[in-house]
Length: 229
Image (cartoon, rainbow, N blue to C red):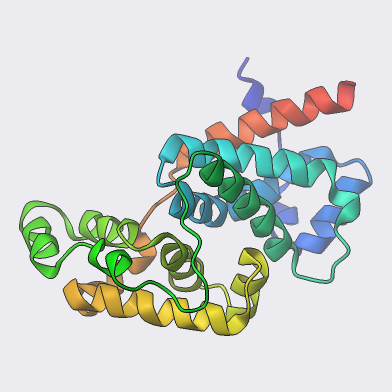
């Protein structure tokens, strides 16, 4: 029998708030944690991938973030929205991995200048990609080419449509820093393709059903092992 078939989440709980689901999970309804995962898989994957630029490692980050969140649900105090708290866990895990590998560049409030700006693909490069690839892939490539801190802010603010305050809380920066980095990210993208591709921005870095099921199943298995200990 397919083990996934044994995990049945009643349809009526889909309308519950995050906080209501968390309260019930804390009371022993562990299976309801699947609702949380399916609700936030897309956001967490996009946030992790914006930092790591690697699909497989972004999935690993999701698993670690969910397991950490589950094992520390008692630490969620409700001072921020649950989604913000959860995204922050994933972002911190992704940043830790990136820094261990020397991948993620830290920038101060002044943003990127000089070599950092020149590292972004030129308009001519992107125009060539437009001729060779579908629009969504081109936009993903352009976003991926942004300097690291700009890319993280852009994905959270524009792709995931998080507020300035939420993004600042997740990334541990000031709101003014978020605004500055978003402005500069838009300027870089606008040079090449931003104005022509705004309608496609919500389609980038999709977290498909197969990938979603894989992460959910893996986390539920790990949670089950934790409960047996």
